[in-house]
Image (cartoon, rainbow, N blue to C red):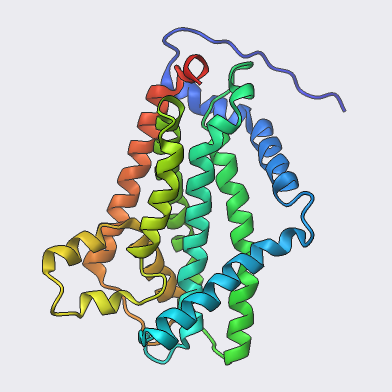
Length: 283
């Protein structure tokens, strides 16, 4: 069956709506980049895709020992601490990988960007999809912990896709924004690891947000700032949907986190589109 051919017409002042149509027309390139990244991700490694499971598993073990056994941090009511950390660690690993790799994706594909026209948004978007596949593979850890502790989530787990979408939106928004900045200011190569490291400390990965919100010694203004961290909303949402039981959401703070995620998605797309025409000249 002959492949369908089409012409790409590049016009000055081309209407913005054509850009989104071009994204759909270049979906084949999107699939190709995602598949290429999947193939080379664990190429020439001894255990291959098992790294998707081993890395978060070891981190969960360390967090459980440090925060629970040494730091005496409490778990959510009735939830084994390892499961609570796992439900926080998996979305954090997804966000940190998707953010870091999408932010560096344009630099990594500079040869492609300078040779042919295509919507540049495809490059960081394809890296987020690869990280999403890694995230789904690493889910076997949580299933194993459910089985080990005989823990059964309730109906809220049906809302898990919504919080996964929220995590994807958060990673995409921040990734697009930093990717556009990274093309012109290579300093961001050194800033990105710092953002990821700092974000881990101020996100509720090894502890519950209840510790923050119920602590009377923490000033209210700091609690507001804490809630503006978009990963607080993502992780709290994951725990609410996947742990069930008596886990509750702090709704105003949760809505604040969602608002920041959505805001950064629009800001990221807007800034990326604004700078996109200069990528081939600057990179």
